[in-house]
Image (tube, rainbow, N blue to C red; front, side, top):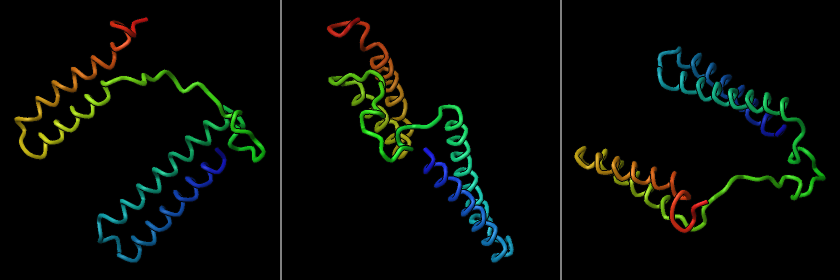
Length: 133
């Protein structure tokens, strides 16, 4: 995590410095590049500070140790259904919704309804049927 903290903080400072130089060289008349570079730098610093605070709270992680084994970073990442069809339905709902935004707004409600069905199906997938617990 230490290397990630350094990367994000150095990138943040770099983009803020480049943004200031860009603003000076364009006499602050170009109103897209200067704020965009400053915001990129601030966002990188925001991630770097978050990682730094998390590192202080959690402590040394296995990825910080050069001699660490892969098994030391083994953690429980959660439960995932290997045979679930609902993520495909969710992707289809997103595709129909985005298609509706691009091609015609009358298609968008169909994607929203399909998205609600997919969300309910994904949420209650393990409450009924063969995989109920």
